[in-house]
Length: 186
Image (tube, rainbow, N blue to C red; front, top):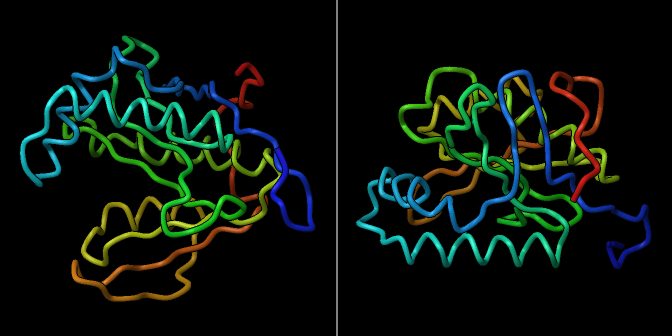
C-alpha cells in the first residue's frame, strides 16, 4: 500500500500481535456480544447486537482498504475479550493515524491498555509510519497516563461541543518496546 504522497511506502499493519498477556486479532461477528456491552458502557444510550455487527463489518472493510484498524485484545490465559486497540484515521490521517483503545470496565486498572497500545505502536511503526497521534478528552486522566507511559507528548488542545480535546503525538523511536514482534500473518 502506498500513501499517495512522496515518501516511504506504507505496508499493512500486522493483524496478529502477541504480548506476554494478550493476543490482538481482528474483530469478527462472534465479538458482537462483548462489543455491544462495551458500547453500552460508554453511557451514550442502549446499543443492539446489530449495531455492534455493523461496526465490526465497517472495521473489517476499513482494514481491507487501508491496512490499519482496531484489533480485539484478548487475555491469552483464557481468551476473554477485554476491549480493542489499534490505529484509526479519526481526527488524523492514514499516514499519521490515531492510536485508539477502549476497554470493558472490568478490564480497567490492570495495565492491559498500556500493554496493548505499546505493541500496537511497535506494529504501527513497522508499517513505515513515523508519527502516531492520539486525541483524548482533558478529563480522561487514565488515558492520559497510558499515553504518557508510551512516550506521547502534548501537542495542543482544541475545544468542541464536548469540551476540551488534548492532541498528543508520538514519533518513532526507542521508547516503544515490549511485547513480541508483530506476526506478519494477515
